[in-house]
Image (cartoon, rainbow, N blue to C red; front, side):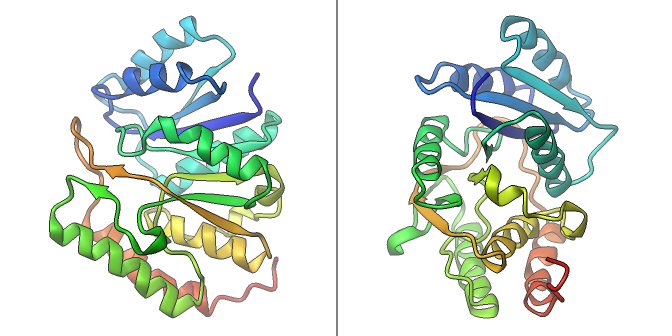
Length: 241
């Protein structure tokens, strides 16, 4: 058993899931994987279960009844990781927009104490590192992070990033039942909560490459949740922590 669990939510990822699993398990640093599967009609779960026979004790699946949102998928994964004794848990997409070769870098930065939460950042050091996005989506994402910093005061360049390593120490302080958002606002909420709890957030530069296979899950309702949600975070009563 590895000390690090890679958590990957899936919905209709049959084109990517086997390749991403094999790539993670080919890395020199050993990682375990948990696939949080939201009842994909395309057979994603069947592919994962077949691979579980090849990678026993390293590959796990958590099947849910349907699409319940990215945030709830990761919370379910964090609960699994805490219950099974993992010291580090990493959020990673299934579509190769997050390069598995960066997993050891995230792990090293977190395990060496550079940060309690380590973010694979598209916008660190004033650089934009995104491939294959249309200019409209790129500008929307970049200025969304600027907007989050202005409203919350949080000094994280890529607040909506979804390639993140959490230490067990940090996650144990979260009250998951108080996490409100389910879309990309979830990513902002998790980082902002970390700052409110006094944990260090450290960003490392990555290159984000838009998916080649499969369909993006981004939509306008997810964007609206993120846009308006930051005000809720800024003025939320945090005394429960």
